Length: 434
Image (cartoon, rainbow, N blue to C red; front, side, top):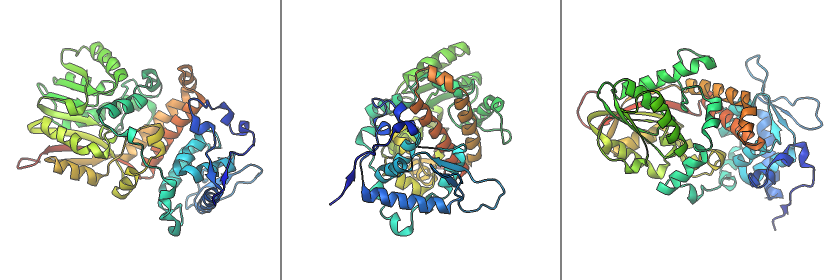
């Protein structure tokens, strides 16, 4: 017989759960039901893992910080502050890493160095559970909901849940180019003032990869807020750019007009599966992560069919190791639940395979994950700096903690090299210059 524990009676105000809007955030406002066994196992695994890691853990009633494994450097280990250990372990016991993120959203744990804590966890992700228990990992994983699949209708819904939140929200932490993808800096570390030039450097590299110049017919899949389209038009290209985000489309149209290139840029609401025509060059920046593995053949097939003979595709893509990608593809994660529904980061192996199956070959490939970590640091610092402005837009405390966790979680992924970002050039399969 399985004993299921109800939520404990202690006061939510200790952790900030009393501030959570239960209608907007039901799974954060309430503690999940979890069996005593699952909670006990989760607590044992978490306590053993944290004790071995270069982390310090502070819990209620402890004046001292519990040291983790000593590090080779003199820098102090980051501190994870557990305000409510019982709730923290219960959430992990019920929902694994989704529960870990929801516990942060609820204010049940904190850190003055959130990126540091998450980077340590990312570096040791394969060691967190003892070998004998790793095969039970699926017991803590949830399947991705079918509603998140990127069918034509599903893709529109998924885009609305992230990119249509508010143009003003993104403007609060992005630089004036409104570019929401990794920059390429001249040197690291960088300053916020370096972001506009670094984003233009990234865009210029992509336009160079696909040979964009005067008279080029360029297709962009994934408009963003229009900066790449404007920059391509200023090179003399004729640009068609498509998006599923109405918010982005509307602002991109205004920015194109303000830049004086409306005669050379078409901005359309259109699914990549419905694009027609043939183009000298195609560019797509961090779009494939939103496609989903089930639709990668359709995506690469579209790239192939839309590209004129002798043309090039410039692709910027976040990547993860192949084995981790396979595990993630089967799992409903905190990111897929709260930030990017339907998304999946591909591996480099998947990019090579899917492009080859579609009749494309990768002719250039360059990674620069360190630059994404720096880009995310600057975005995160900007977001925290503008917290009051974000609140004034109507985004509550739970949303702001969620967004901070998302930016820090992503930055940690690149700092630990769990994630990378690559710029690739693709051409038709067959003879021709590389």
